[in-house]
Image 1 (cartoon, one colour):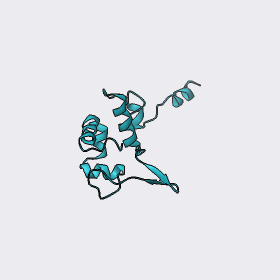
Image 2 (cartoon, rainbow, N blue to C red):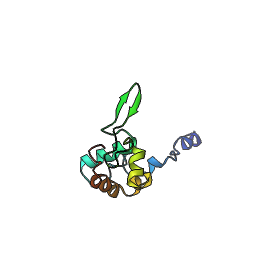
Image 3 (cartoon, one colour):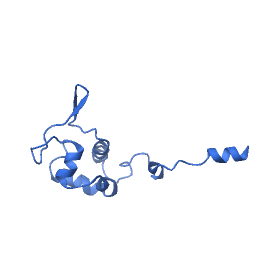
Image 4 (cartoon, helix red, strand yellow):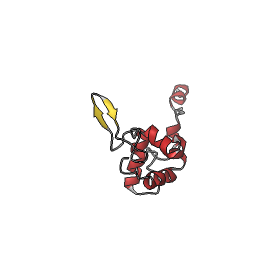
Length: 105
């Protein structure tokens, strides 16, 4: 019986279980608006996103004015990587703010 209990108590090895809090942005020392913007950006559910016939539609990028402002395009437009948002979230938020893209996120 004890052997069965030990196998059930093995914790999963997912990386999000290693975090100290449930959300990636909750642990940041910033205001709630920044936490919400970061969570939206990482999840891909931007404020400016809309749906048309079941497809996500993004407005034109405010920085370059060429392509749609999807999270992937914003990263390439700012020359950032997803890892930057995970490792140095405050720097990534500053990039969004300075480039004028914070209102879209």
